[in-house]
Length: 103
Image 1 (cartoon, rainbow, N blue to C red):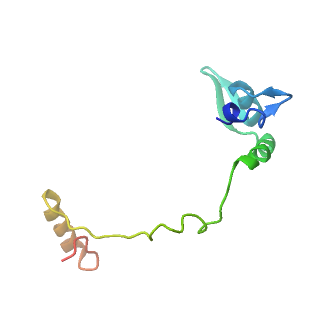
Image 2: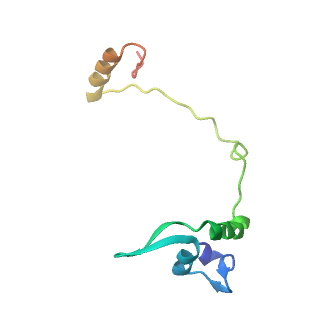
Image 3: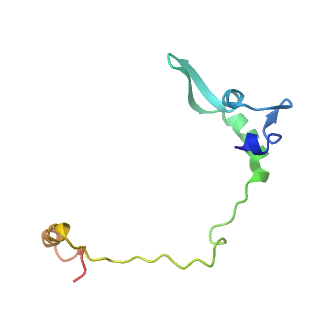
């Protein structure tokens, strides 16, 4: 996607990187009976890529975004139907400390 929208960001030697050049530059590969298999990351070149992509990403500290959202709420919903009896049986077996269905 970056190569389509901002080809100048990850061009090397004045040429836009296609998949094969990207794989060769940033991945550790191994040739096997099925073709070229990606085994890992080429860490040195990945640092170069990260520095090139840095201006495209915005990062916010945790808690600074979307302050208008309400806090997460958790609800206990009673079960009905076929599983109700099974849950009650489990509650009896486990004792009163673990109650799945509010009384």
